[in-house]
Amino acid sequence: MSRVRVLVGTRKGAFILSSDGARKRWKVSGPHFAGWEIYHMKGSPLDPDRIYASQTSSWFGQIIQRSDDGGKTWNPPGTKPEDLMTSEGMPKGESNMFVYDASPETGKPLTTHQWYDGTQHPWEFKRVWHLEPSLSDPDHVYAGVEDAALFESTDGGKSWHELAGLRGSDTGPKWQPGAGGMCLHTILLDPNNPKRISIAISAAGTFRTDDSGKTWKPINRGLHSEHIPDPTAEVGHCVHRIALHPSRPNTLFMQKHWDVMRSDDAGDSWQEVSGNLPTDFGFPIDVHAHEPETIYVVPIKSDSEHYPLKGRLRVYRSRTGGNEWQALTKGLPQRNCYVNVLRDAMSVDALEPCGVYFGTTGGQVYASADAGDNWKPIVRDLPAVLSVEVQALP
Amino acid sequence: MIRVILPPNLRTLARVDGEVELEVKTLVSQRSVLDALEERYPMLRGTMRDHVTHLRRPMVRFFACGEDLSHELPDAPLPDAITTGSEPFLIIGAIAGG
Image 1 (cartoon, one colour):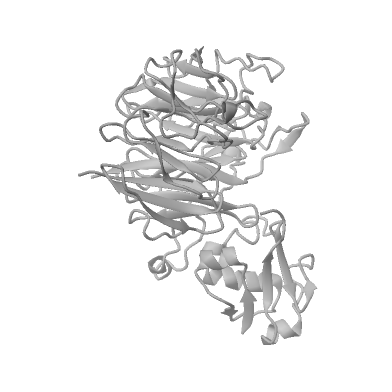
Image 2: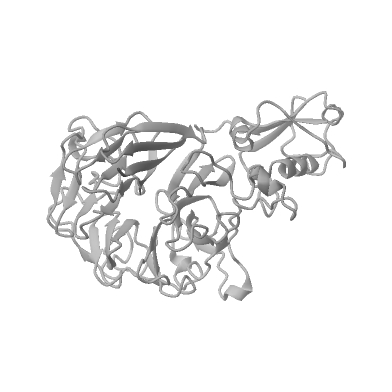
């Protein structure tokens, strides 16, 4: 029988939940990295026991951790005892070194972006928001960081370099921080086209490369954001999350600050599909593992009231790729619930039926083993949940 | 030997309990102590001072002998009591927020 492993990043450590394929009884391991913020953990699709984690702290900065045994043991890449004893001498200890590329060789070194007051502000590395392991090599992994930039490692996370073409694109000086900072929080790899990557930045928008990251273009046509001076500007949109189904990578779904959107041309144009949602503000969006037109969002009251409408926690599911939405409530608190669900805190598993998972700022992780029809908390009272990823294991 | 006390989060990261003892062969200063510490524990690089500029991270403080030495020059000699090991060199995470 298949197994499931849920990787939960929280404000004060990481937790790993595991179950058999029935997804009824769960074991909880953790906290790992107690006291540290774990923004994200994700396993390699080629080697599920290879897991990368972003461990961060306002005091002590960024740490990258890696497990090669499914989360039982962890090490910052390049600092294991056996690494220390190699004939090459001491490791460089650079797995937490994210330095923006300002070399003239990259063409357009960029050192400032727009600040809250409209002035230009230097790019300053703060943390890694999202780690996206490559689809073709367990040692290859991408990192989306704040201040917004895309880095990659091809040596299992031991060293990182920036894909500077993104920040160096013409629009870079117009990017500005959202309320959560100027973060690159979503990285979508196209399974049919290894040179194509789509990313999203708050608050700049969505961008795509078709040449493995050398050049990028904004893909925000069709977005309408009333909180910026030009509501249809090329950049400046506060995109909260984008998602795709691997079988149809040209179809993208987006939860924007307000509005749920879809694109059927890999982001070249977008249409609103908020339909009958009670509010179209929210953070996460995800796609059913087996049904490319079934999508999930968690509507949140507003950008100033980050909790569900009327204290009722509801996932909304559309089986039509948007516009027509159904509230999913069974097993979710329907009174006095004022938690939030953050952008990286929803995931699906590939079992049959599809499992759907999300974590809350109140420390619960809810799971549905039947595509959203019924829910239950699989762990409660953790620190605020920042991210949830699920792995289906043989 | 130089005695160093790390804050809890960095003890977890370096997988040490209690104090760390370091041998520093050059002039005992903030820089030489941190250099020795990072050489022994590479995972601590970047956590106390910036990788590139080597400037102290804003919310990290250095205390010794009842004094806050955070604003001393990195190459300034540390007190004799640190050099002899009779007092520890404390690396502190500033108390700010949760």
